Amino acid sequence: MSGDRRSGLSHCVECGGAPQPGRLRCALCDAPMTKYVTVCDQCLRASCWQGMFMCDAARTAGTMDLDIRYLAMRALESPSYWGGCRQ
Image 1 (cartoon, rainbow, N blue to C red):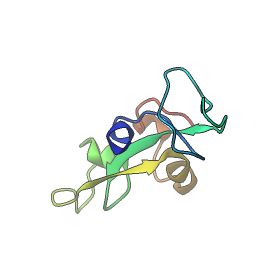
Image 2: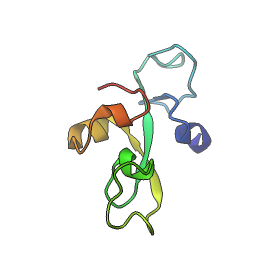
Image 3: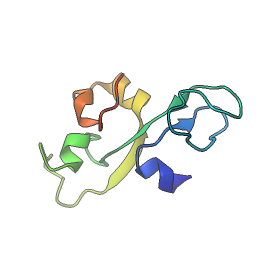
């Protein structure tokens, strides 16, 4: 499943079910799907990982995949950096 998360595909919030193109709800349990965005592990911004607005630690930082809902709650940057995902 982590391989799919890196690509930003949807996963079920409840059961972790695999993504299915065009579906907003899980085919297994009917729960909402979520999206994951790859971000810098130091500043938690996708724009840094993409090399657009790099933080001070960017040269040695790694990456991590975060749930889009968490990023929206933190409001550190515009959702436009999240690969077409919307709040």
